[in-house]
Length: 388
Image 1 (cartoon, rainbow, N blue to C red):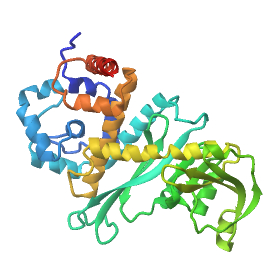
Image 2: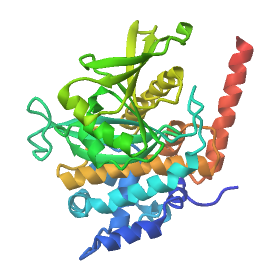
Image 3: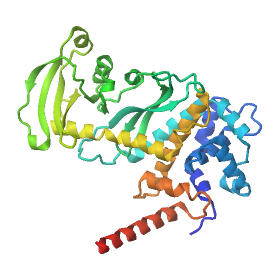
Image 4: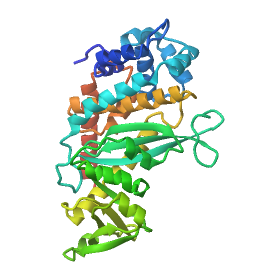
């Protein structure tokens, strides 16, 4: 039944306004605000992310064209580009960062029972990586990167159950990936999957001492001695070896004095042997390989948000504006994930976002939109089946 509300207005009902206002009060975000308070800034930027606007000018032009609908959309008033830009530069980004972290804590448990392909382990499982946004160093002088270029890194700890980010840190391009391990609070029993850029024996030993597990690619130059070799492996699965080792070298051995494990797996698609380093002595060698294979979910996540949210084209030049921009993008992803779970939709987050992005001015209920799309997909698949 038609609710009489625009789709965008329905989406705002999934956003806990009370919690957002708590962070506005915490950082005094609306002090001396006359035209555009923090909430209206957030929902206009949220509108821009949802509809893939390329700039603040695009957001303002689109909202101006639908000025008579703004009240019913939930947007208090239309503002020009200058006002939106000033608010984006001056509002404290920590309001949006804290709200994004609140949404993470709210959405992650909704997907806690999601299965992971080829993995039958109850532990919390995370993939750790970063993605880089290249920038002009002249415009973004606060964000130095490599080779005299500007860059911003988004360090992300992704919960593989549901592909929901668990932790996000935004830094300049020169911030080394492994440094993030120093500020991370490990969860006992959790499994952290990362590539060889995170090989820092001091940080890995801290994970080990905290009762957490890690799986990483081993560096080819790593010096170690084999203590035990498990010959009971099935090479038809791709496994080549399973060894218990200790690190050699005075400095490395001092930083990580405990035993480690190396699992070698043959990747027939790329004709290469992958060497995994882990402190998990209980999981089978094949489970270690399958766990690392699922690390690519974070690569898919980065590719997805770059293609479907406005990340690569930033809406401001200051560090504050860039932080607001990225956190609003993450909030958009989390809100759509919340909608997916709330409506128990079998569609992917990507498909739901695509549907919502072109339907913000519709008055159909979100449930009807998603159900109709799913029905059309099923009919199309049946037709293809019979045509084959």
